[in-house]
Image (tube, rainbow, N blue to C red; front, side, top):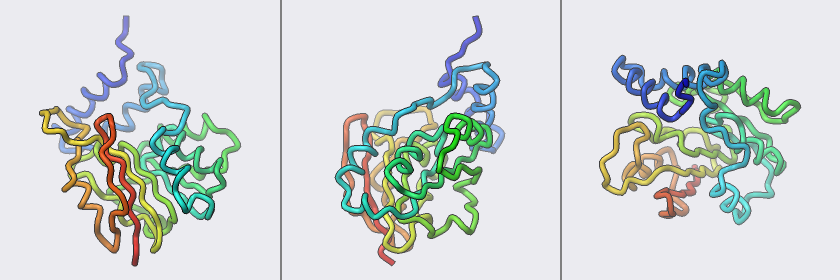
Length: 210
């Protein structure tokens, strides 16, 4: 029987990509193989991340209904959650296959799904959003934190990442230390709250104040 385990295949593809010096090349291949039915669909959740939901429901800015962006949107669950709450939402992903799957899963969606690379952001995304959501994407790449340029002045960046507990791991993903998260504190981005939660995970809220 064919091994349909997408996580095992992800490890194989990531190792090959890193060896070839193209550390982000494996994402689209993984989604492409899943779309072809070779493996199960990766990260195939239909509900928004529970830490996003619990944070958003208590966030004072939730009813301001500005522009939101989901980094590494994958199949779109988090982007659809924000759109359903009234936010004008963009979801972008490095993988064209993932974006195609997100669009087909959510016909008639108000979310703008697009292909974009966090390592080389289009100018129209930089500094454009009142809320930026980043969940388990930064830690999938080397030298992870890079999302601080997306919020507009006054905008919020919400982050969920694996937390480094000192246990050796074969990356990716790269569990992040608090010092890693501090690399997001550039261009006027400052921490509002950084919590250690079960997982082990970081749940962090930042604000761009200039």
